[in-house]
Length: 450
Ligand code: AMO
Image (cartoon, rainbow, N blue to C red):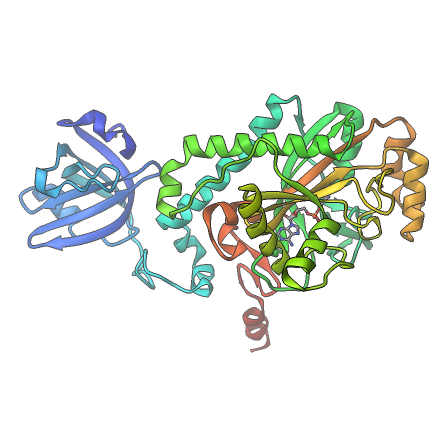
């Protein structure tokens, strides 16, 4: 077999006969000449199949979108008039001399780059994920997780893998999926919280990226029932502000990585990378609520959290007043935070914790944790939880735990806001929501009844 050359590399083979493999992205006919845009993992190129080249024409003249091919031909510079300066390889083409069809594809249900509804997009993910747009979004997402790990490794964190089947739940609340576990009730983890904290006692600094599960029964543009949580946890901190500082540097690192490695993808998506300020502005929840009241007349002062419309308001405010697309909201009421939350001794009733908002949506929750065994037991009891159920987790605190804290960052929310998609489902490869596990659930039920 001919050695395969990647399409991004053909510029180094001008005048040579080489072999490329890929998918038909587009086919156009011009008299007796067929033009094929062939796509591989690295790029696209135009292939010219003319009747003169009988071997190639015989095999390739019937191809349709998404057929999978191998094509051998000569790489040529395009004539002055046919150069397309707006696309990669726009000055090159391959003149096919022979070809092989690995697999034919069915007629597509719609044109590949045509505007379609979200519903259709989700119904045909194995196909729609092949578009330029989707490929750009998920290449960016892959780089985010890569840079997340890169930054943390450079800063002394160890990567850990944690269970997704758990006994008791760290976050509290009703949003937990139950699971029949050999006749016992187990749960799907809502976060890696317990394990990352326990591991602070082992490695001091740990991180993990993994799926978490939320049985939230609402269908919104920001909620998924399974999402990817990027978490870190670190020991020997002075306060939650150390975590905020670490997240600021991490954001800086991720954005620099994306700028370097995903410039083309951002161009495809017409999306703009944010600047990360040296110090991301931070305000207490109460200060923000007062401000909203003063500026809009709306009183949300006793609410335990910001509503989506208030988060959007705060985005405009931070952009205008601090020139920042990021803002930390700190000091949420302790009564509404999980039992592991550390109370601010200088601001009783409020947590040494924060949310990070980016372009008008919460992307991170983090903070300092209670590290004292007795205080943690007391906090559980205050929340009506039975410490005996958490005895496994509590061992870490019984046997010595440093002051520590960490955060959880929603990968899909960050991706959605970075690439500028309205709905979080478009920033999730295979989104799970109330109505859909790949296919629509109600449809399936209907089929079973029939
Ligand atoms: P929290 O529950 O706030 O905190 O979640 C952290 C971040 O996860 C994302 N997120 C979601 N993304 C998509 N769909 C959902 N249903 C969803 N729920 C949450 C958000 C959110 O900011 N253990 C703590 C973190 C910590 O303190 O370390 C936790 O899980 O981006």
